[in-house]
Length: 101
View 1 (tube, rainbow, N blue to C red):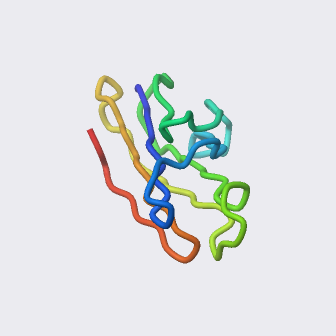
View 2: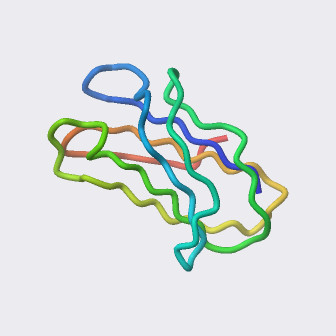
C-alpha cells in the first residue's frame, strides 16, 4: 500500500508544514513516521498488506491552542495495490478529512 497525506491550516489559509504524522497498523505498531514538508505533504510511504490503518496527526504540536491535541483517522485498506491519500483540513476547533486520490 502506498500512502500520502496533505495537511492544510484552515485558519492561516496555507499548508501546515512540520506536523508530526505517524502511520500505524490496527495493533498500534508504527509503520512509518515523519513530518509534513513545506507544502504540508508527506509522500511515498509504502507498507505491505491489507487491513485497518491509523494515521495519527500531532495537531497539539503544531497549533498553539487546540481542542484536538491529536487527530486519529482510521481507514481500511482492501486493495494494497491502490494508493491511499488521506488529507486533513485543520483548525483549532474543527477538522475534516476525506479519501483523496
